Length: 220
Image 1: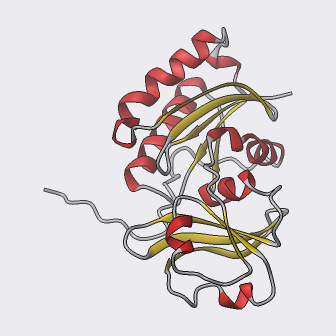
Image 2: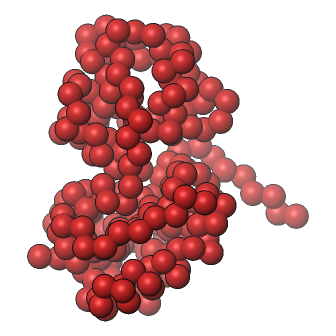
């Protein structure tokens, strides 16, 4: 048995959970997108205190590391890295798109296409088999009526994520299925355990958020 803190601030909601292997021991979330930075530190402290769990008992800390909101990704990774440094624990970085696919892998479909809204008609997306094997790696894509038509010609594809509504208004193929399932930190433990058992840990000194697209910050 192993104890994990799972952190997600990558998209709209922020959420955290403490898991013992795949069992969720405690969970909390925040729907105010602009308040993740002020919420997360207190939320983590309160979650451990209210469940009488000591942070130094953790085996590792896992974070949803992108793609997603630039600000959200920085908040999540900075929080996870800070705790790992302070507690001397390993860091696990998970793909946000893979977490989204994991959340709906039991839904009937041949392939899963998680999609994150990247403004206008652009999305961050990837395509997975039901066992989470990658069919198409993460990419930034401008959506039009022909998007994914090569896959849809042969497979039922489940589109999920906060860009699913955008896709539903554009893609009209009969093999396209759309899910309004919202992924959460509670969908992370399955992947966290896999990375932990395979010793897939991030380098605390050099790890960066997986933005997918280049991001430029104003130096002024």
